[in-house]
Structure formats: C-alpha cells, structure tokens
Image (tube, rainbow, N blue to C red; front, side):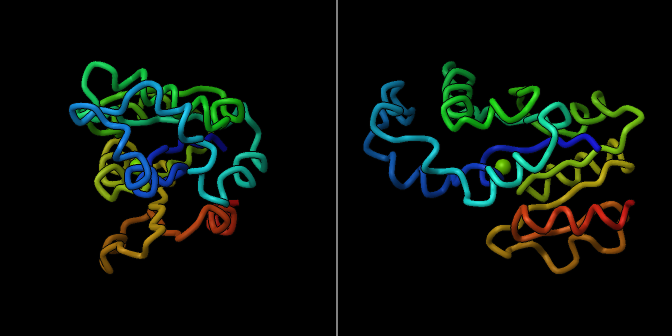
Length: 173
Ligand SMILES: [Mg+2]
C-alpha cells in the first residue's frame, strides 16, 4: 500500500502549537527564529513516530497545505516545521500545496492501493470525489466528526488515532 498523510492536526498538534507560539508572531506571521524557542518535535502526537516507523518509508508521502495567512514565507515556514519534526526522514516525499487535495492525490494514484489520512472532512470529500478507489481515513482526534460523515460511502473510514489504521486496512486484505 501507498500512504499519503496530512501534517497539521494529523501528525502535528497545531492547536497546542498556536497557543504556545502566540508571542512569537510579528504582524500575524511567525518569526523564523521561532524554532530556536520551540521544538517542533514536541508537537508531534504520541502515535506518529510509532505509526511511521511501522511503515516502509518508500511507501509514505506527505501532502500539506500552505495557508494564505502565512504569507510569502508560508512554504519556508511549513518546510522548516516538517523537517525539524524529523518526520521528513521517515517518508519518501513531501509536497506543499494550496487548496483541495483530490487532484494531487489522483495524480499519484497508480496500481497499488492508496491510503489517504487527513483530519479535515473537506479534504476527505475532495479525495473521495477525485479518486473513490483511494481508502480515505478521517483522523478525528477530537471526536467531532458528523454522525453521517461516512453515510454509506465506501472506502471512507473514521479513526480517533493512527494506531487504529492497521485494523481498518485489514478489511482490504
Ligand atoms: Mg490537517
């Protein structure tokens, strides 16, 4: 299987980071020196390293959205963050993009079964729309997913943590 993972609120506790980093912002954007003050590794969820190390590095990629509010330095900021978490050492590619992920995931679909994991229902919808054959997993860490999110759609699942993913994939043999 091939895996495509999101970063913010999937691997990285963005909400806790935002709380801790408020005082390092200038004009609404984080200063580049922030990583001398805060260690990105401290913001990975506990299940991330065990999950990534259980997979073959060559089969895992990262697809992360650059938010407009980060301005011109958005890519630089997000790249710095991902690299300093150490996660980029455990995956074979990282792509930084804007907007919806469906087309990006569709471009990477091949013979092998693809698994897409993201915390945003809208991104799961986008991927499901462009490539319904992809196993799309909503990582709902806070248990906020709408009751009818799956609503009979095949290849869509909800988990609360990454350790639940392997049991879901067993259904696919
Ligand atoms: Mg996210």
